[in-house]
Image (tube, rainbow, N blue to C red; front, side, top):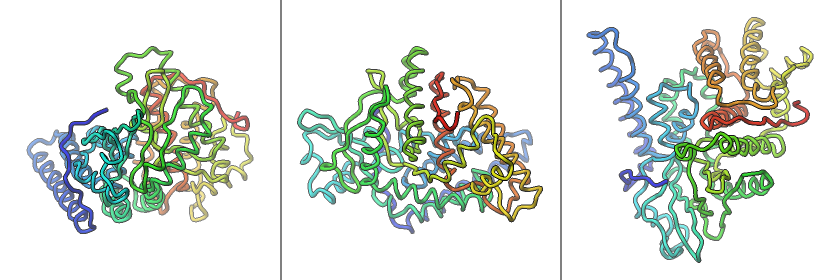
Amino acid sequence: MSINIKEQTSIPVSKVQRAAKFIKTGARVGGNYMKHYAQKVVNPSMTKDQLHLDNATDIYDSLSELKGSALKVAQMMAMDKNMLPRAYQDKFTMAQYSAPPLSYPLVVKTFKQYFGETPEGMFETFTPSAVNAASIGQVHQATKDGKTYAVKIQYPGVASSVSSDLKLVRPFALRLLNMNERELDHYMDEVEEKLLEETNYDLEINRGTEIATACGHIDNLTFPIYYKELSSPRIITMDWMEGLHIREWLLTNPSQELKNKIGQAMWDFYHYQVHEMLQVHADPHPGNFIIQEDEKLAVIDFGCVKVIPEDFYQGYFALIKKDLLIKQEELDQIFFDLEFISHKDTPVEQEYFKSIFREMISLLGRPFHVDAFDFADDSYFQQIFKLGDRISNDKMFRKSKQARGSRHGLYINRTYFGLYNLLNQLQANITTTKPDWLK
């Protein structure tokens, strides 16, 4: 996929520069609210659609210039269909494919810093313009000795600005996500840890190689090979994977049989990682998958991998069993261990939060309760969205004095909802394999 967006010649790198950009954007958002409420005096029936569009445009434009953690958080929010108004979803989804790329002189500067030579000195051909640009880095196509490579270059300053950016994006996240501060802060540590890992390209190469090797036996799945001699802490060189992203592929009107085939490969990939490896590719957005001409699914990015602690795994998936034949004391212990409830809760609060999380996990676990599941069933997703809306607007949930749920659940829930959304886009009917102990 190529992109034709105006290139950036620089990125604000210092904390002062980046903070100034956030302050300027915050002022614009404040101005949009003032304009909206002034117009609403004249037209009381006016909706917030234009307000959402104006804010989404201003916030996305700002974050796409800053790149890095703030833009990645926007991308994560866009993956959850019921988290944001539609205008934000549409804008933030662009972070998956088409953030404004860096100009070529900055790419050359990075190469010289790590290799002491230009891209042309290392490769026979190298596209001066990025073929894909996202939140953490951008991709160029290169050739050498008859092979075609994808070369991913990290944006300058991304790694060093993760912590400060997350502090700056916090007020926007609180307002957009309708979360309480305790809940947001509880998860921000986990987000920061994962984003710092995403900027570690040596770690990405090692994890990508490990998972590709372990999952090499899965039908209709393929992975790029990484080339360490052509890589560095801020540059990754891997095989160029020819093919189409999911949205493009669906425009070719593939048969139901083909959609099921690709969807099954995706399900099997996640099943094996979670239940056999206890780690998982935790960034299941459409930009990380390519469907090739031989009808195989290529996985192209391993920047975000969640290692699943054994005790969290046992408790979380115990709750997904269809017939929850667990003694009440054991069930309560699982709820405590997963931090859904605590000893600070009153008996009323404990019962309320146990019922809420039981309902959530039952809904999330529904595909595990049958031999095959049709992810084209939009009514299933509507139930998920309605439950999310109900919980986020519930007074008891909003007024909770503590965060709910283990931090480990953040990326596991995100992984499954992301996977389910991709399978929904594919309209795939899947044989939902599960580990023996979960049957």
